[in-house]
Every structure is written in C-alpha cells, then in structure tokens.
Image 1 (cartoon, rainbow, N blue to C red):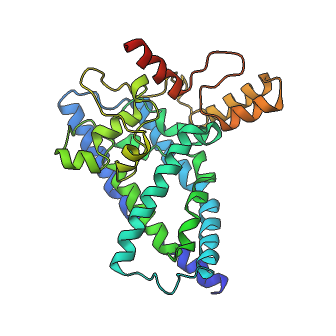
Image 2 (cartoon, rainbow, N blue to C red):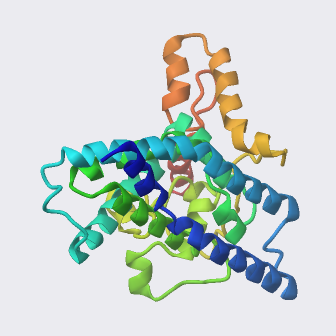
Amino acid sequence: MTTEQLLESFSQDKLLYVFIPIFLVAVVLEYRYSVRHKLALYQRQDTVASFWMMAFTPIVEFLPKLGAFVAFYYLHEISPLRDVVQRQWWAWALLLLLDDFVYYWFHRSNHEVRIFWAGHVTHHSAIKMNYATALRQGVGERLHKFLFWMPLPLLGFDPLMIFTVMAINLFYQFWIHTELVDRLPAPVEYLFNTPSHHRVHHASNVRYLDCNHGGILIIWDRLFGTFSEETQGDAPRYGLTKNITSYRPLDVATHEYRSIWDDCKRATSWRDRWRYLLLAPGWSHDGEDRRARVLRRQLAAGAN
C-alpha cells in the first residue's frame, strides 16, 4: 500500500464525526429537560469547560492517531491471521469483545498510573453528570491511548476495522453519562455498563473510587475485582476528591501534569520521582497515603 492509499484509508475513519451531531442534540434535550424540571443537572462553567475539552481532544489526538493507524497497518501486514480474519460477522463480534477488554485495561491504567491519570483527569474533573460531561474527554490520554490496542492488528484485524469498533464503544459510553436513567433490568445491570454503574465510576465517594472501568461490558470489573454497585445510602458526589478551582481550559487540561511536576521537585530521590509518575494518584513520599485502595481499606476497617 502506498502512502497515498494509507492516508486515504485513514480518512475513511469518519464514524465518530457522524455521531457528534447526535451527541449535541442529546445535550440540548437533556439541558432543556433539566431546566424545565428544575433538576440542576448542568452548571454553566462546568459545561463550557467540557466543550473546551471536546475541542482540544481531536487536536491533541490527530498525530498519535495517525501514527497508530500506520503502526496498525504494518502490524496487520505481518499477522499470520490477516488472511483468516476478514470482515466476517463473527470477526466484528469478536473484535467488539476484544476491544472492550483492551478498553477496560486502558481505562483502569488511567486511574492506577498517575502519569496516565494526568491525561484522563480532565474527564473526571466535571462536577456534574450529564451528556456534556461525556464530551469532556481526557485530553492528554490521547498521547498513550493507542499503545494499548497494538496487539489487535497482530490478531488479524485491519486498522479501519479497529478504529470503527473503538468509535462504537465510545458511542455506547456517551449514553451512560446521565442521572436521568435509574436502574435497568437485573440481567442488563449484571452484564453491561449502565448509567448506574457509570455514576459510581464518576463519583468521588471513597467506596466508589477507581471502580467500574468497563466500556460496554461491566463483566470485566466483576472478574478483576474493580466493581462497585451504586447504593441508595451513598449518593455519588461527582468530581475529584479535591476539585480544581479554575475553569480556564488550559488549567483543566494540564493541572495534574503541573501537580506531578511539583511533587517530583519535592521528592528527595529519583526512586520517589518515579513513584510519583508510576504509582496511583494519592501516593506521597512525605505525607499520608491517599491512594484509592488505601482509602477503601480504611473505610472497610472503620465499618467493622
């Protein structure tokens, strides 16, 4: 394949752009419903910041995504399965499952590795749970995101097929960013990521921290010990454990990188500097350990 053909194939990845008008209409409808019923689902500055993050994301993502598409192409070319896995129905179904599995580990890593969290935290800094928050994507995470998907072209899936399924996964996740949908039937709640499960994921309550990382399916969290159910006695509080005070777009997008830099300057050894980069958010070399798993363990001990 020539460079021109490769770029032409890359340009066919347009599905997410088809979804954007649908997303915007949903935001408007949800906002109007919120106003009409006095639900206070939206806060002006919070929503404006979400739209800024939506605008930043494709700018930051363009080169990493193009580089990933090229890498996926060459990995697909050397795959021993490339002539077996075409675009059969079963290949699409298998890819949806594998993509969601990869997404789980990508998303979980964004919460458990601080340098990755710095790129993802913009999504969680929203203090409201609504469809505008769904558009508030993690900006910096675009720099490392596609590395997690590198094994899939080696399994015989072509680059455009992978990018299409990634877009479908994001489309599904848009609709779970809402407070307007309560619990769904039990079988759905057991297998799929739902608004209830995702409210937990966005909550800063200790019992909910770093839980429910699945994209379409919640079974990964059930299998790997990161599931938490929404409880009536502990309503989700959205935002961060320590919310940012600025709504300036660059502050929202970069504040955690600056915080990491400050912590690394305070550290007295290179070992601790690497820990600030690679351990979960909340670790400190000279203060209280505020990592999510530590806080949850303390909560459980206090309840006993």
